[in-house]
Image (cartoon, rainbow, N blue to C red):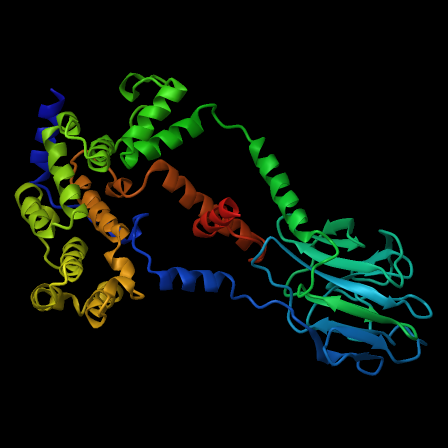
Length: 491
């Protein structure tokens, strides 16, 4: 009965036009090493303060050392505007969870009126940080916190010669915080907008301070502080109510979507899960059952190379399995033939992205087999027509560039010869075939599992939250998180 229904659905699908899906949005879409490096470089591209600004400072009252890391008071303290103020050469970076710097008091001078804080670019450079609007400062002579006006508020202990004072911006909680000699003094809401410059000040004879923007180890354990802040936020998130088994079914849907049948069976046994068809908790199978079922059997058969797996496949599922097996083995010619027989609408448009991906993969297979003359002939006959398509320009250029290397697998574009490239093409064909299912209400559902949709939504929400905070803070970027997990696992 089920086999007949599947066969009827596949038969009906051949008479319908293939819905438009964008395989370039697949999770397995190819990424070259250069692309990942460029993305990582963009994330880390934000410049950070590295030294003191010698041009925008109250030079009449302070002198900056030649290494631009120390300041000594020169003037005579007669007025409130006789302050030696120096900003960093750049504003505090914002694409991170926390920014932090430190100031060591080498000499507290006659009055100990050193201070540390943050100021705006237009700050009056003859006033203590915190005495003017759009600034804040922690002052050593009284231990007071100043936030935009001349009246201070009780905040922490005084500091003097030999003390190391730190100032930071916690973008996670949108707070400023200060430290003394490696201990947290206190925090308060960040109510100043716009770029903020790390700032230090001296205000009496013989006062001298040195700054550390991270070139030397900090006195305060900033990494531990960041970890603690993230754990605190995670703890708050963990308290949010979710239906008890929702995470279970999200994980299960991912395994089902990509056909990890061994893991899926082990997962069901370990959690004593009933078969999905018999489960009555309201989740059941998603509307993309047609596609998910195909993937489940396909991946189990191919990965384990078990001949018994073919017994489990329905007729229409065998066709999809054949596509994936053919592509993963590099047999693109047979893939075209089978598609033409079973799902002709998928390749009806010879200029479609699916046809381009298959043709480019066929070219790559010629390169893999070291059949260069055949590769050139094939490119002229089948890839030349895609030269005017901007959407295909990047991959097309890299494919053709394989011809330039004696050892293409060792080249900078050798990733095209790696299994993930075949997997991407297989997933693209898979998505196109599944999108022909007449019962598929939204063809794009075959592109992502529930878990991937959740991660995409998490990324968007994180970026929205960051935008709400004036583009400040650490955004959730999955690739970056995966890299961090990999580094943690290896260390």
